[in-house]
Length: 395
Image 1 (tube, helix red, strand yellow):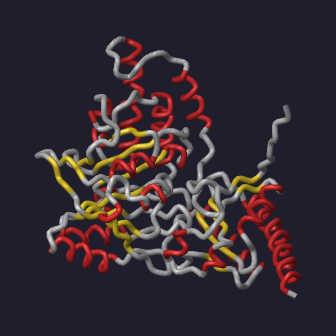
Image 2 (tube, helix red, strand yellow; image 1 turned 60 degrees about the vertical axis):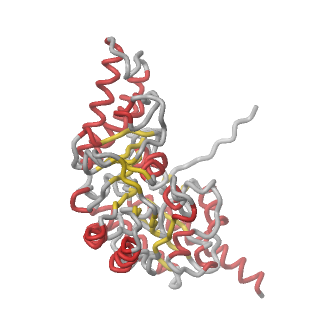
Image 3 (cartoon, helix red, strand yellow; image 1 turned 120 degrees about the vertical axis):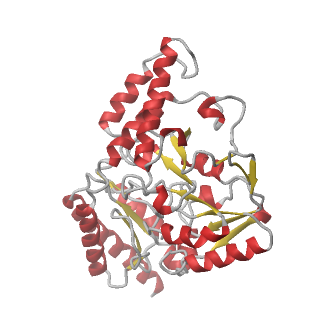
């Protein structure tokens, strides 16, 4: 049997998944070799429990909260779906929400609405830069509250496609009078900007291990106040303090914890990557003056660039770049590998034909100027070939 392999020399898709950190890989392999269920009281079980609790403390430090406010999940999608619940516990009983407001540029795991029925979901528009208008959102929440509704709001910290950073502190301040609860998808922000749930006013936060160099298959839901948390999505066992039933994936959780600790130490070191990204965008616009960089006028993550050139289809460009050993993306990696019009770019009002050609470049801490130069040289050749072919067909 022949096994097909592809060569990837340059990896520019860190928002889809960061390479596993060597220290994390070593720890995960070590934990995998151990026997023991973290819920057992004997020695091997206590050792497994110790690994889970160490990781809980490490993830909590990344978010600036006590460890007891971190619940582990199988990933950020599960954390988001858990948080988007019409029923939360507030220490005195249940708190019920009748309406979910979701920013129009959210990740698919949030845009799907979690456990809210379709009729209780509402999309919150974003502007051409991809930003939520805090005043407009607050006005809508106030209107719903006056009508007797209880509102849960979901706004991500950093967009996975464009890197645009939402004004969370402004949004939460505008929502304060209404008593609405704010859930934040913090997946792309973790390790790239400081997470401050208090300053953001985030009542809950979703995280993913593999976006910060941890293993796939681990995530977390973090709450800002110990007494306020969503009803569990998975029930049937007392794991995670009755907040998420099922035997913990100890090895993945341990790796998540170490990755969180390492990522927290790197938050202040993205200036060089920002300069590299900015230089790349200038050269892209030099290659083709009609290049459009989505979200360029808004605050963005240092590592993310989403751009398009009229007449250059993303699918064709991605295949050509892949054949040259360069891995990039057309947007979210959570859309079944399909290349189409991004809902994020549509929400920003982008032209459909242009949005269909969107390419996302997401750099990592190890990305070098030489790699960006090689990408730009390949892009010049590939995009030129595609545009020339398109002009020939139109003639």
